[in-house]
Image 1: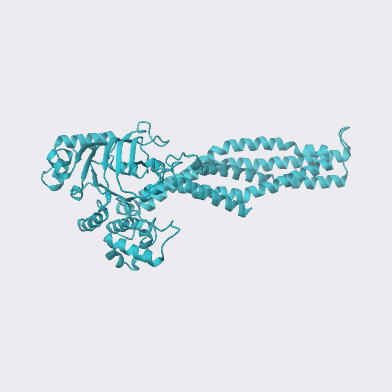
Image 2 (image 1 turned 135 degrees about the vertical axis):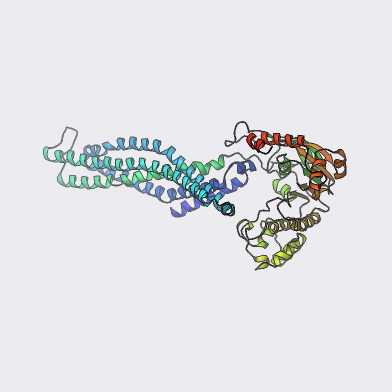
Length: 550
């Protein structure tokens, strides 16, 4: 039974995780990490406990109770009927308990997810907590979430305090009733024409077997309670399997023998699909609207514009982290929805602003995704040489060599032991090793100092040479050499051209360039007013905050 329970839960846990990985980014946008971890860990463990203990005990008790009941009817059918008269009452009592405790267990399991979310946020953001001097505030948040979990747990226990003693009381009543009726029967003879004589030996045996029958009733109540707990957990675990998979490989996919890197956006619009956590007014809000452009092979396309204009979303559509709501995106003439996901994503390298790193060594993070799944992975020495080459191309080799254990230095969760610029260069080295035909640089230098930016920019220039590149940047100096600059506003392209053409047009791009280059002191008042209005429409700032900045 133990082996069965552990194998089943191993399968359920791993299958649930595999299915979760196939979900698109809208699921992860809505779900907190702590909540998902609670489902995969706490709820799965509850199921494991039930399968390991309660299920095994249920089978044992079921066989034992049926056997004893049959023996009681064999010894004296009439007295056996008296003994079992409390069983229907127990069944009704149990059904009441199951109906009453089920929603309370659902609430309790939900509160575990809330508590894990608060703990995960506090631990992940511990640096911010300390620098903001908000330890007391976070402690209060944890205490509040923990008390809510305690309160909902007590709501479950209160019902248990009624149910379990109640079952024991009914079992005791059955035994006392058997003793009294049997005693009268023994001394005064059979109570009716359809009953047989009761002898002393039979009565003693009957009482002993009755005691063996009613004693496990307390254990039955424990199994019922564990069942309801496991049921609430199973609904959360199996609920992951009910979430629709919106982005999947096509039944008949097109093979990309060689990727040239020509990308076409044709009338692309995107709105986040409605989810249970979205407000009705925000559901299906358009993020990009009727976007059309073509990036030829080897061309660099820059995307600029105000925050929230849809730049990052636009390039994530190319990776199919989200799917377009309308229009098509083509790679070398193929609709990306007709291309196998693994082929598409291996052809596109993505360097984000965060530069996420896993807990492990520097070398493991650089090689991540390139050799992990390869059946024909090269030798360790060859891989090491490729890692060194990638690090040098990313301007990362020098600082990596200065670490205590060089490339074998463990960098902590999310690369916490490295600086922001160092993390970014390791992430770039990872993309260099991938050697994609198409490159996406999403604010890759926005969070570093000028010197580090220069190093990173040099590595990015080297990386983007001779391949199609999409560059998102707020620092316009980093994209002045782009072949095409797309200026986005409110999810639409409002200007396009190269750097010189856009400056001559004297539009939004020219104004942004003038401020950053120091050619004008500030943006025109009407432009600032329009920007504030857009932010208020998106809920970025409130009307009160807007008035305070005037």
